[in-house]
Image (cartoon, rainbow, N blue to C red):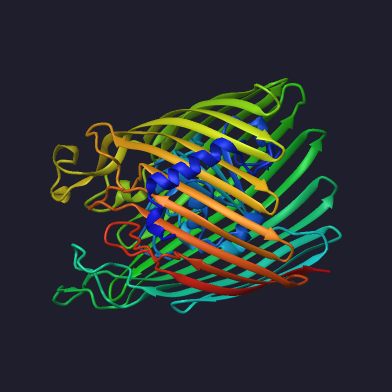
Length: 618
């Protein structure tokens, strides 16, 4: 069958009929942290949390974290070219700057550009990903308007274990990684190194309106390392140190106006360099039965350099301290109280800025009989944007052992970035935070390891921060060409229908996302949001053999020009030919779909991969 047969109606019909007939892969007793800041079973939460475990991650054919997320968690992407390009992850229609990304509890991303640097995070260092779909400011503070992505890096296993992988693909692509983990007495450790490279194609298409197109290949190289070390001085107490460092260099198409004549020049080999560091030191201990304390200090650094003759630098440093107490009372449920301090510092070629934020959090999660409830309250007091109070209230009801209803309502906010406040000739001190108010309802079914879920949501935003001109700007010649301002309101509403089922050696999964994301002042659709997105996956495993296929269909999206609908087919196969050894192959974008992840940018063409993986222990 040709890929043209997979039009929107076909994919939607297959996915909807499949979901209606079956159900999902995740056990109702899956334990997550993101929904309440402490480990809890999903069945005790009113929030919508998706878990991508290690087996799913390793079996995926995705070459980037962003591609893994949109296939497994139903998020949408905006990207400047291939997997190494600047990437925004949009959860339920919220922008990338309205999403919080955590790595082992450390918030990463640029406070100047206001976007988490997900393109710099390597899959090889990740053990598990939890995605909170829906506002999370009442637990995590600023920017959790659309959701929270919580990334857990590799942890120690019992005994000593080793792993290594090497894969080679078209366009000079290669992936190399190696790691080890283990525990000895009171000590545990996990460490890994990885490199990923792709020669790529031209990032831009010919004819872009700014004349930036250059026919040279624009590839990327990502080098990363990760380590976790833990010491258990007494039962129930652990001191841990975690580190992640990633360096991404991406070739791009651009134009510079260098002295002495400042004539436009698009011929240099422009490169974006991005360094991301996340370091945390923590202690977690049981003070009494059901009473657990956590103390942590952490630092995140995000530094970017872009250009050729003229290089622009942006560096953000976040220093964070946390004290948290969790009390599992039994009958009354779990109560979590925390205080935090966040100190942010920004250094650029144009300005310097800093701000401090003190926060307090109180969360209560419990269950009685067939009822469960969840309530959060948070207060953030910033030296830049003042005090913000956010809350969330929800609950669930088990109709039967298999059926569960849930509902959740709350508010959220996004803080102005340092660019919004301080960039010369654009930023305006005193910009208000964006505000959101949301409500969602869900119904879930689970039986014999299968599960289906439907969630409908609505999120209304105001004080959206964006470019403006005229009366919205200060009366100052410095803003003759415009400024940033609180410009508009938006409405994000839609539904997610998902499911999966195991049928002997076969497993099926599907997800359909519908999204109505509009500017409420103009009625226009928000840019780069598709009205619908569908995924359909089929996997087979028998003995030492495995194979799979996945289809991703993304609807048309508005941008500076209309982006057409896209359908991508990925194929994979593996053979475990000896204990611990697996030969793997992938064919990405098998039909060579002409992808355009954002206006005038080129997505990756068809690419074949062949790799070898080893996992074993002593």
